[in-house]
Image 1 (spheres, chains in turn purple, cyan):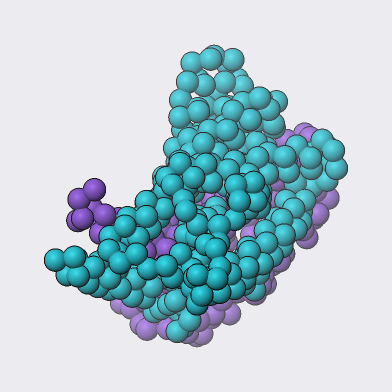
Image 2 (cartoon, helix red, strand yellow; image 1 turned 30 degrees about the horizontal axis):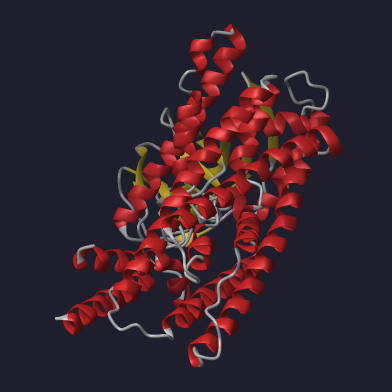
Length: 203
Length: 289
């Protein structure tokens, strides 16, 4: 075997051993997320979140929690589901990360939860109360991700972020990758919705 | 000329190992989490994530279409998609690649050994997922989510403990062999124990296979779920085997080009294998991964 090829193979073998543990992410659950920011008197007070799960995870949820197999989740079934597979997410801020004018304010509680089934897909709808700093024109940055990457969250392509209630004039958002933060062994950056008034950011 | 080639090989290998280890998250996290991830990796990772998501969605679509219409044409791409999903899925962690490649560093290995080993690791992982679902649903009849969590915890403890113990054995044997090569035979674990090691490395149930099985079983298409599980497993086997074969071939090439036939080299390689396995086993147990 030509020496160059054998040298290269030896080098490649050494390289492979020390490569990052993963060249790609490894999620087992895929979530499409939509966010609705609710305003009162021009200040954001609540974040409504809707998660649509992939078919495979939805099948698992139906199997485990649709006990009467009617294709829907009764109030009792939802309570059991919430207690067993949702409430523990408070330890990971419900995969929701909020920064208000540079101050991190990640949620630790929700004030409502509902599980819905539609055409074989499971949806979670939950609401996060916001205690943000005063200031109607401050920048709010929202992102959703699982730091362990067991679940992969994508913002919905169709209206990922909406505003409701007493919305300040000139409010808008942009989506961008936050390269100043990373997760999952530094291999991924969170995608953020940056919400500003009249395009002016405060950090 | 031979000395110059040897210097180049060790220099190339040394530089790349240092660079690669600096890029390795295992090493990187020893010095604290990075503030920024390389843009190229981030983009590539994101694209592979999307690819997995789309493949899963497409497979589900074909299954549901067949369930509704009983049209066999809807099944045509299913195995191929499952295979492709398995190939991409296995590029991620948790499929025994790092452990398997480290293990194959020791002993006199050929490419076919790597192929067999990689296939057994992958089939162990896939079969474990299938058996877990069938057992939880039909035998134990408990919640899949909590049952899978327990099964993963139990098999992880067994697997990681075995990896750690095997690593320690190889480390001690390798050091003894390297110090006194004339007094100790080259350490090479036999074929049967090696295959058992492959089963142990892959025994943690694959959640990807579990969810695909559940989807199919929910549509009363268990046989198709098994077919898709097989496709995913074969795909994972392709990726895992390819990685192991590359390391085995590269290792053998490196030994050949060393030019100096040092009797200590097998012992050194066995020690390296042992160090990496011990470290991986220990880290995995500590992280509860």
